[in-house]
Amino acid sequence: MQHRSFHRTLGVATLLAAALLLGSSTSFAHCDTMNGPVVIAAQKALDSGNVNLVLIWVQKKDEAEIRESFNKTLAVRKLGPEAKKLADMYFFETLVRIHRAGEGAPYTGLKAAGSEVEPGVEMADRAVEKGSADELLQHLSKAVQQKVSASFNEVKASKNFKADDVEGGRKFVSSYVTFIHYVEGIHNAVARGGAHGHGATTVESHKEQGH
Image (tube, rainbow, N blue to C red; front, side):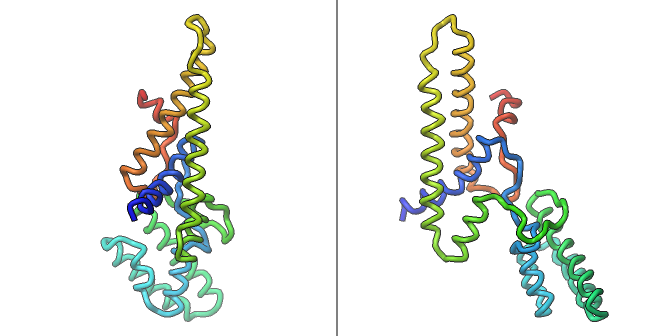
């Protein structure tokens, strides 16, 4: 059980650490796509008339606004097919915007179904659907081992530069900084528990902070 828990935490860290190494600033959330879990829940809620199906996606302080939007949408839906389409889109956008605001993530509009999402998010979704994280954990564990080993080997290979070899020293420093911040990103992600809704910290931002 302890071994399994370690790899689960490591898996979350791998996603964030990979983004750290690549300098990604995107959010791992995919809740702003038309085939994402938030919009799917909204469709089910509107078709069934059960607002509780979407309230789970927003914070308690936002319930009143969602209920009001939900009731307005249900009323407009009755006016005809075109009105239904427009009303549904209004509700989808309202729900996703409020959901992302609750995560501290920006809302830039709904993306079309099939829009590209982070590979890690896609793998995580498949694990949830299958009811097993085994394949996901194996993939992430292997990926983080490969990346740490490759980064470490670059440091090791460039470490023994001559005192007057400035360029060689700079090469070492560059590989050293990359390696240290990669490992730091993994450690911090584990300590945070993989907070959702925030872009990964980049190596460049660490440098700006004086690391």
